[in-house]
Amino acid sequence: LPVRLTCVCVRACAGVVVAAALLVLGCASSGATARPLVGAAAAKQPLQTSRPYNIAHRGSNGELPEETAAAYMRAVDEGADFIEADIVATKDGHLVCFHDVTLDDTTDVADHKEFAARRRTLQVQWANVTGYFITDFTLAELKTLRVKQRWSFRDKSHDGISPIITFDEFIDIALNAKRVVGIYPEMKSPVFINQHVKWADGKKYEDKFIATLKKYGYGGKYMTKRWTERPVFIQSFAPTSLIYAADLTDSPKVFLIDDVTVRTEDTDQSYEEITSDEYLDYMREYVVGIGPWKDTVVPPTRDNTLTTPTDMVAMAHARGLQVHPYTYRNENRFLHYNFRQDPYAEYDYWLNDVGVDGLFTDFPASLRRFQDWTAAKN
Image (cartoon, rainbow, N blue to C red; front, side, top):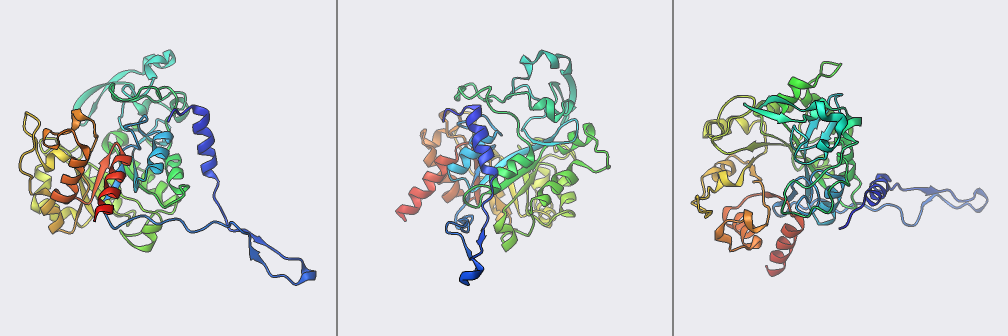
């Protein structure tokens, strides 16, 4: 899709229009009663809940630059059940969709001479990081930047077109889709954000995150009527943020799990420690699922073949927790040799052999086609 900025803007503006049922009053002299106009808005096709969820990781970012309006709208068009976003904060307290706390890898910030002095070194999750930190920029300044593809081997023809979008703009894309599309926002790097962004009202990043969801009507426990009308999963790698958010909303939450050797940013525990039976018994009071890195569920060998799966999925399912692993990228360089360069073989393995409840994918069209194809065969 050779998206141009003007095309994106036109589609985004058009998407803001919300269809409403209008009434036409008949003339009093004719005695006609009020009736709806022909073509009034029909009920949206509901979210599918009969098979594992297709979660568009940062939008359809295998095709278009991640976390952009174009990538999210493409994912909706391709049949994603949920569109996923990482939410961080700007210097002036706005919430935006962006994965890293630095702008270097996926924007043209280095080309903006006016920002050259902003580059510095800070500690991020136990390591020193040097770059242009998003928390040093206002929303207005970020809007002057343009997003680029993260991976050099992917299509670069859309670089320099799309701006960074806000959390509100992301939600607007989901709510104005022609069918019910869920959102899957992440409370990203909450410790770092709370250290470097302060709100005048004394609220924390997590408060602002949940308040934004509530503003648009998100809430309700998993699979209730309210939830199915506006589906959302709130995710985070920080268990304390999920526990804090549990006092603010009953929306379902998912505990993200990194490599078992990595330490959490908030509790300084290894993910191996906090995926124990005891810890999962504790966390299940606050979350409906876990989102593990796929290599944590089924570790590969050094020669890129899979070993025996861990008991992580079984442990989660025994506690009534869903499992939504990340990330499925389709390209040969990301496929383990077991799958013979066939992404459908990988989907089949994870959905049918491992038995997970959803997949984060960079290519939502591919996953949808696999699920449609296998459903047609059954």
